[in-house]
Amino acid sequence: MIQSLDENVGRLMAALDETGLADRTIVVFASDNGGNMYNRVDGETPTSNAPLRNGKGSIYEGGVRTPCVVIWPGVVQGGAKSEAVVSSVDWYPTLLEMTGVPSRPGQRFDGISIVPALRGGALKREAIFCHFPHYIAATGNLPSTSVRQGDWKLIRFYCDNDDQSDRFELYDLRRDIGETTDLAAKEPARVAAMGALIAGFLRDTGA
Image (cartoon, rainbow, N blue to C red; front, top):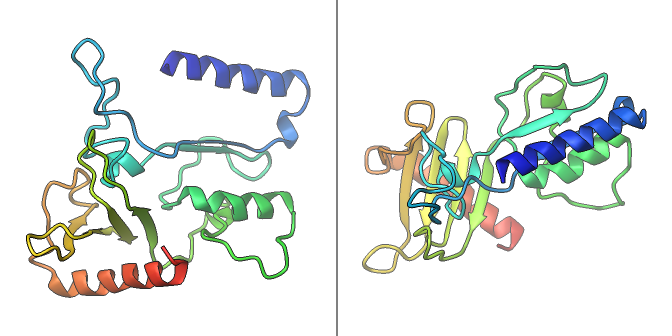
C-alpha cells in the first residue's frame, strides 16, 4: 500500500512537470487519520505509529496526528517546517485564500486559513478541537471530544464513569507525546478551563 501510494504520488508530480503546470499548481498531501493498528498481517499490525498512542479510529495522537506536506510554488520554501497544529477543516478556507477565491457572503468556516503558517508565521488560534462521538470496537475508542491548547490536550470521554458522568484525561504533549501519564487529577483547574472550551465548542457548533 505504501509503495503504491508513493509510486502514484510520483506519477502525479511527474505529470505536473511534464505538462508545465508544476510552477502554478498547489499540492497538498495529508491524511485524515493515523495508521491502522488493529488489523493483522502475518500476525503484525500493518503500520507503527510509535511513539504515538493507538492509531486509526482513536482520539489519541496516533489516530489524529498525521503528516502534511504542502507545495505552493513561490511561497512555501522547499524543506521548510512548521510546528503549527492544523486540522482537515482548515483546508477549505486555506485554499480559498491561496487561490484568491472569495467566500460566499456570510459564510462561516469550521476551520481557519493556515496561510500565515505556510508563509513561515504563527497561527492565531486559541485551541483546536477533535469531535469523535463514536464507539469503535476494533480500537476501543469511546465517544469523545478533545481540545488541544498549546502543549496541553484534554479528552472528554462521554458517560464513561461508573455513574455515567463524563471522564477526562489530560496530557502534556511536549513532555509526553505518547500520552502515557494522565495529569487530570493533578491539574483540576486546567481540566475545568479546557473543559469549558470543549463545552463552548459543542454549543457553538451544535455538535
